[in-house]
Image (tube, rainbow, N blue to C red):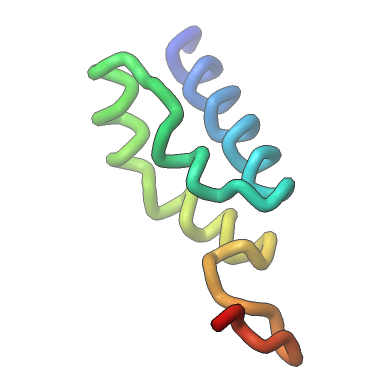
Length: 67
């Protein structure tokens, strides 16, 4: 349970950082090897959460992407 809670904490802090416009932080967050495999194993849910928050890398409707 402790490892699960720790993993959830990493996910939450990553989403908060992405909200501030630095989504690449998600890929630089240092994780222990066992956490990394577990984190990548549940990567689908993280992608879904990011898309729900509208930070999946695409510009919002009506906003022109930067050239």
